[in-house]
Amino acid sequence: MAEFDIVSKYLVQHYPDDFARFALGRDDVEGAEVIDPEQLTVKARQADSLLRVQLGGETVLVHTEFQTTDSTKPPMARRMVGYIGRIVEQYGLPVVSIVLYLRPAAGRRDPGHYLQDRPGHRILVEYQVIRLSELDGQRILKSGPVGLLPFVPLMRPTGPSADWLQTCVREVQAQPLDQATKADCLAGMSLLSGLLYARETVAAIFFKEGLMDMIHESPVAQYLTQQGIEQGSRERAIEDLLDVLEIRFALDAADPLADRIRGIEDSQRLKQLHRAAIQVESLKAFQALLDADE
Image 1: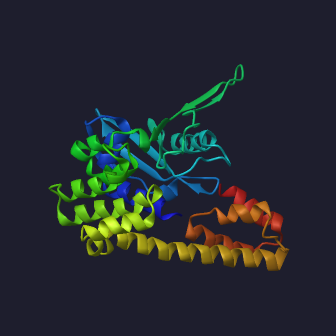
Image 2: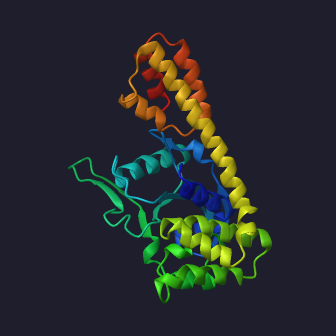
Image 3: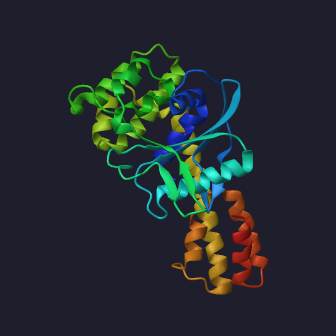
């Protein structure tokens, strides 16, 4: 999992009301509650964010996927059908789904829907496509939700683009936020800005503003470090599982089954599969177990 995904998910988890209002385009959102994304996995892909909110007396689910590039295998529309279908199956509640594209070039060909126009078997699943580069960054800086402030450098700039990142940093510094929240916003901004600006440019601006200590000690940075440790544990679990399958059943590293295993995010599930790989009588039996879990 890239650091950009980790930071984006952290911000949703810690500022759920902000993201729910942004996704729904309404202010009358109450009691946003984070649903553990491990409960929503489709073909070894874990959903990025799922929130349960109260909207006009109705319970609604807000599903968000963060993308830095275009999804091609499978295309984003097919992925969203899987996510939305699983959400409906599991919760039976109204769903609002969005795909949030972080890089300017991403998402231009995303149709925002999946359509099977077969007579008698028509399927239409719609979702909202939001490209940050098309949003007014200055409006978010002045009045937008706090949880979105770290994303503002990726939005449409006001004035010369070369000065935009520094403008964003100084605007957030001037916000009447408590120290922990301001540290969250600035640390998130420093990391997400790497999607658009050279790392050297980002570091120079934050160093010039005297913010490096605040960033390194921020809750976001601590969370990112912890997730990095857990990611290392996941990678080791994948390696151990593939070793067992190679030794017992001569599974080739290029086999599609190996690719499926590398895509599994849940470390606990990997441990369970590792135990199963030691015990099953054949590779076919192992694959049947893997299929049954998806």
